[in-house]
Image 1 (tube, one colour):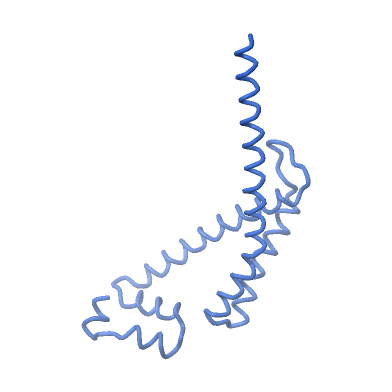
Image 2 (cartoon, one colour; image 1 turned 90 degrees about the vertical axis):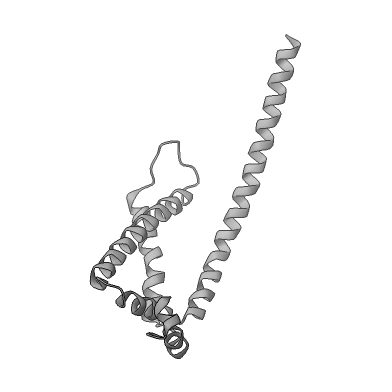
Length: 147
């Protein structure tokens, strides 16, 4: 920010010229002392973030792939691997498509729509379960009072 304000570098102009947000971020990092080390740390952090995120998303998606799954039962590793592959194809396709940020936002919105429907179904299911729980609580309290 200091380089931008003092005029030593014009990252905003670079972004406006190229439209590449990630290129601008890399340019900012390159101005820092120890830039190669910072880039390696950023790379390792991104790999760790994506690995854990994809693993948890694939596990969740594979659990929802089953009609019933007993408590403590894990989904088949083949199903989980299939979800991992499907989930990693989207970012790879976006890389090769050389898509702009607008395209990425559009794809994210389209991909998020089904997830929104699932979230609504989860909320409705929670409300049903909460209603049953409250009815059972009232029923057991009533039985205790009668005794």
